[in-house]
Image: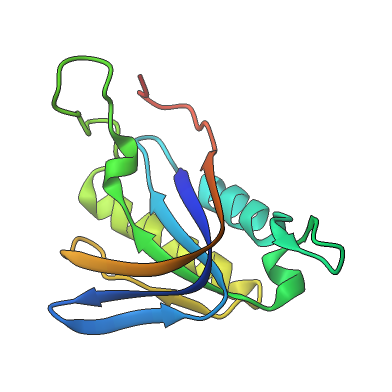
Length: 152
C-alpha cells in the first residue's frame, strides 16, 4: 500500500457539494492499494502511521505521534498514487489494485486506523472528491509498504 500523509490543522472532503468527512488537527491520509496488497500491508501501514512521530513536542521537535496528540485522521482513497510516469507523458495506473480489491483494502485500512482509538473520517471510494486542507508545517510524508507485486 502507498500513502501520502499531510499534517493538517484541518481537512475536509466533499462529494457533490456535501461534506462527507472532516477533521481538526491531525493527518490527511491519501491511500492507494496496489496489486498484490493484502490486509497485512494495511495492518503494517496503519500501525506505522499511528505511531509516526511527526507532531511537535513542547520543545518544537517532531517527537509526538497521532496517538500522542489525540489528533484525527481523514482517510481518502487515491488510486493516482500508483502512477507510473516512467514512459511518455501520460501516467499509467496498472499497478493499482483492481477497484473491488482497492475498496476492500481502503475500508479495512480506515477501520485499522479507527481501531487504534484515532477519530477517523473518510472520503467516498471512487467518487469525484474535493479535498480542502490547511497544511501544518507543511509536513508531507510518502510511505510505501513495498509489498511483493507487479510494481515498476
